[in-house]
Image (cartoon, rainbow, N blue to C red; front, side):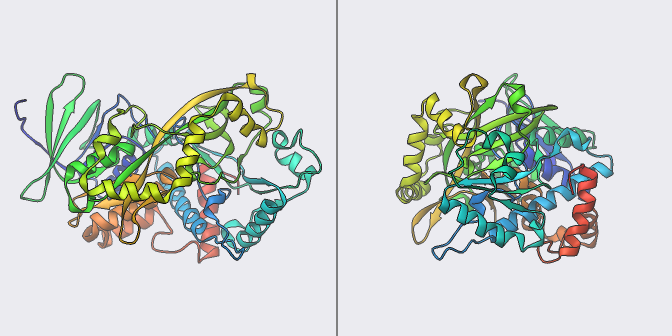
Length: 498
């Protein structure tokens, strides 16, 4: 047994140094500069798991091109409601980033965000018909009034030459394009946010520090036990509020809190891989995020896309992601993560979720056994003349899909993000995956409304929030003029197309 250290008092403990903790810490310090914040990260740097550019399967998700956000119902109608919500949330993120840049609290926009057109591309008569209906539904809303549609091969060849070269004229194809899309490097953004946070008084970032235990005290505070991985020493912190933003590792830590709200939650890990282009001449011929339709049973994070990225100042071209399975909850985690997460309260929901998602299981099995030729065949559906020697396989990050109790089905698999918090608001955890990082600001605002309810209703915090996010308390989806004004401002600051 280690000697019990004297606890350090803190207002807030953030577990995990990813984009969620960086965003929450930034918001809290803007709202109350007197807060004492302790951040603990198990790895030796920030943004090394899901927030890292090479691990993150979604960059700049704004529902412009992701077809899984606009499903078609049994009557052939395309529902854009989910897309509207995600678009609005991404607009909120852009407002906070713009505010921080104008205030000199965030680095240059070009460090983390770049203009890249967002496109949806399909082939086959049925898919072309769907895309046209989707375009008609979206174009009617002011969020998407810049969207273009074409099924003309010559126009498409101008938009996406790599995708069109080598296709037969007899194949029906179509695409939508919107030029106000962005590519976001969330790793770079997270590093910039933490750089600013560390300059603030009473903010301390501890790398290579792993949270081991969370114990609720009689006075309502949390005793957080942390191990320094460099020397094996333990330290403790008494915190008024704890945020568990440890990506795939959040579920395990949430279970250690023993709050009743955590019961019944399970996690299903899904790994990912990319084909990365290593030929600059090919990379230079493509400048767009081109999304297609997902395979039957595929999780949303596995929607295929030929994706322009800007990473560390260089243009990159990725295709994928290819899903896989690992029992790790984090890329740098343990193969025992999944079995260790099992509890009496979540075993049955996980079994039920598995029985209700047989297509997903079949899809993952098919992905795991894929050969190089299989992966290149999928790439050639989007880039017919792709050559093997121009591509290499790169391992992406881990995602943990949320499984939770359901009164009707026993257990359901959730593909979005899920916030779990104690009834008294003293602790909260973020579980799940896409669209995650892109909607991080909206998610953290929701957390503040849940866990800092009293302060959120004060005039001081309300005024500060409206300074940071001019649309706060209003609906951009309902107000076309406000949306236009906000976009003109944020896109000018972030140097995006408008």
